[in-house]
Length: 332
Ligand SMILES: NC(=O)c1ccc[n+]([C@@H]2O[C@H](COP(=O)([O-])OP(=O)(O)OC[C@H]3O[C@@H](n4cnc5c(N)ncnc54)[C@H](O)[C@@H]3O)[C@@H](O)[C@H]2O)c1
Image 1 (cartoon, rainbow, N blue to C red):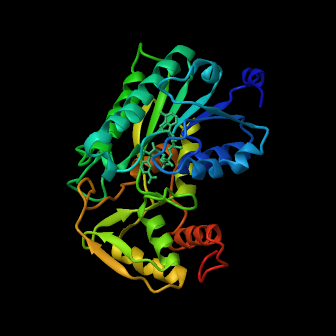
Image 2 (image 1 turned 30 degrees about the vertical axis):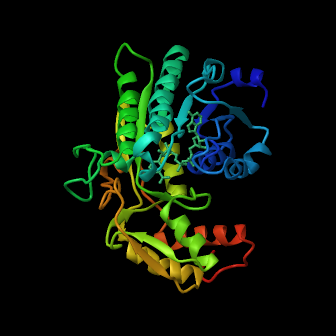
């Protein structure tokens, strides 16, 4: 796509496009006929080569344009001018690494990056922002499933930056600031093909196929609401046009399971005997997460569709194919 073509009609912009969720979202947008500008600076949170691989399909499309740069320093206006929606997925992810010196990296990407994007949105008059937030804004919530009205008290520095990012987005939607309506989507642990290598399912599957022990932090009885990436993408697509002004919305998978249940499923879908090593619970991990989906259904018409069994089998097949392994039991 040439730069001149952008002015033809309302294109859409995806930040963090080379990442796990951003790349799936951009593919879905291209498939639906949108012209997509994707922005990414290929941070080293995990190997940039994996991010390049995520873009393979997109780069083959004439409806996709990759802009390489950091939201904090990039001249954004030229890319935002005339856009109908910006999907803001860019962030420094990961709860555990956010303690200590690296917090500065989180502040840079998650807070400064968001603020720079919002200033550009205000200048260029983009009418809709859909931004990735996180269940980590809740910390150890008092009630499960957790509604958006619940107190937000993150238990990790990462969660603090995601909450700050979310508040910034919602502040720019206030009258007199910018002509933008905002949905911040609080994703609950997203999984599926291309999942980041630091995330639990990915670590479990990689270890299972390699015959390495799986490290489980804590007793495994912690629960998570796991959301398939196709469902997270669907929530974004619905949020493009939903009649909202400024809302934080939970995006969950519809069910809460323990990590020990997940391990059993990993054994089933890989057909491998798992060797499990227990390690102490990690600072920053919430004990439980669970989304109340009432608001997402009411405002977006969102209902998760992918079952954990099918979703995990699909991710296992993706991991296996990356390792050159054939079809795995139960994978489809
Ligand atoms: N994966 C999950 O389970 C999960 C859960 C809750 C929230 N989220 C949020 O969803 C979003 C996507 O997460 P993901 O798992 O796909 O992560 P990811 O690391 O795979 O993708 C993020 C992408 O953003 C890019 N990026 C970071 N800072 C940037 C900047 N300043 N300028 C340009 N590009 C930048 C990175 O290079 C990366 O490609 C993030 O905002 C994350 O906080 C993810």
